[in-house]
Image 1 (cartoon, rainbow, N blue to C red):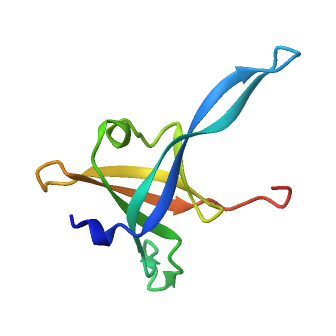
Image 2: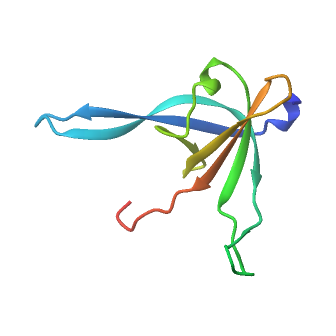
Length: 114
């Protein structure tokens, strides 16, 4: 991976379960790691048994492999880019001598109250 390909600043967040003042358990997101990445968007996907395609809301981020990025998992982590939240679907440990990771994610659909 060449350094000039890493043009997108991405922030990874980790979920934490904490207790509020009434001892209720709540999930809170906090910044885990920020780095530069290469972003690739999909153009669409076919539905099972249907010839139509849906607009692409999935992306893949390629980041340099380091101890922080290797600790990212699909459960309990998410990516934030330009105010958009992406749920991590799976991580591809690329075969380029372990120098990079490809993180596949999907845009989170926001509810009306968010």
